[in-house]
Image (spheres, rainbow, N blue to C red):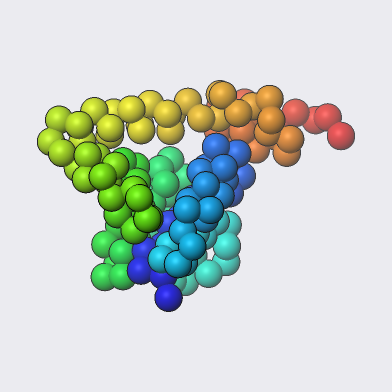
Length: 135
C-alpha cells in the first residue's frame, strides 16, 4: 500500500512525464500517482481544492496532510530509493525558499513550454486563449 498519494494534472505533458519518472524510480510502490481527472479524487480527497491542484503537483500523506510544489517533491524524494539526499536538501532553509520560487516559476510557465506538444489543445485554456477550432 502506498504511503503517499501524488495528484497531478494528467493533461499537462510536463506533469505526466514527471509522474512517469516517479513511477520508474518507485519499485516498491510507495507512491500512488493519481490524475486529477480520476473520478475517485474528489471522493477520496474532499479537502483538496481542485483549482489549487491544477496549479501545483500535490502530495497527500497518509494522515491527510497536503504538500504542494517543492514540498511535495521533498516528500516524493523521501520515499524513493536514492533520492533521500535530494529530499533533505529541498527542506534546508534558504534552499527550500529558492526551490519554492523555482517550482512556482516552472508551474506558471509549463503550458507555454508545452503548447507545441499539446495535441488536444488543453494547454491553450491555461494560456487564456480559447481552444482552436481545428479538427
